[in-house]
Length: 474
Image (cartoon, rainbow, N blue to C red; front, side, top):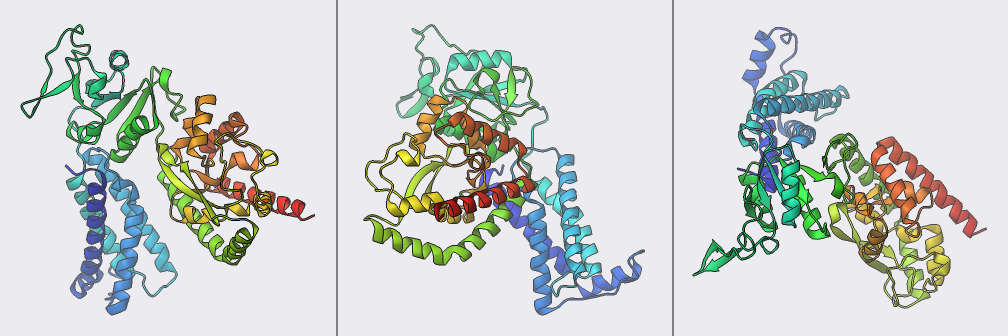
């Protein structure tokens, strides 16, 4: 069974190949003649056979349109055959409408009308067949659930409270009673038969392995739901499990008593609630990413001379590197390096948030850069390469975030979306020195996100920067 990146690669390559073959088939002279002569309603169209460069451009245009429209299908999510067929045909029609709109402008690499109709007709049959063939097939019964956690007592409690049929659980061997721990005997892996600890604490559930086997378990057991049972939800194991479920298209649930570290669906009710791994629709993500690319590319081109001038000014003002890098938290607890123009003396860095007017490490040029927000310009590159977004919860230094997590127990809810250069908290002057307000604005943004809301935040941030620059040089 295909999964993860293998499924994504195979599905994309297959979709591109089928689209290209459909265009070449529909462009054949005999097919064009038969279609425009004998097919009712379309026999008024003219046969139009593309050749050479025009054909190549038309093929690449069609492939690009279809690949973009099929983005939701590349995720290895278990689906029934009828669901796969209907969803695939829906997105093929979307691609056809996009190509028809594109062809309306009479571009040289458009698909002629007869060719376009035939390509869409072929793909309405061929594309669902392809995705049905490679799909991750769910088993006949629904609700195949496992529990993933680090505490056997909590796993047992949740197993008794969930209404779903539980196949087993994933838990580190070291956390289990001795009867569940594995031991190596003569080179083979077996199960220790020690019962001095009082016997097996989870007799009704199968131990499916440790966290390192989670990906394999999700595939082998055809899992469609994972319930988290972590007593200590650390960054690596807790969010690693969520990330694995996201990769394989598996739903994630958590006991309501332990939901402070996750973003939950607002409609969730009951003891076990849904984790909202993807709080936005795929269309929102695509539109947001397109905006990010345009914003970052234009910003880099426009501010390139200014960034060169700032680099020279930093070197003349104080010793040290031009750029300052720092590990910050990305989506689902992962980390990445963020780069800024250095505005402080390198030595003596502290994780405790302080106001700028209380920080004696800021250099002379650093005061100007911070006041005018020009120290943030290198982050345009992080937006362009996809590590950040233009708008989102502000990425926090990992060392500082540990302090904020201890102070605000729901802080990790911010980790379910990509961090941004600016955000709702920034335009409302909520900083890490006031983590309650910052978290409140960030969660409000996650619930309200849209293209127009992002645009509004960017406009307000630009206006705020202009005001700060004007005030600084007044």
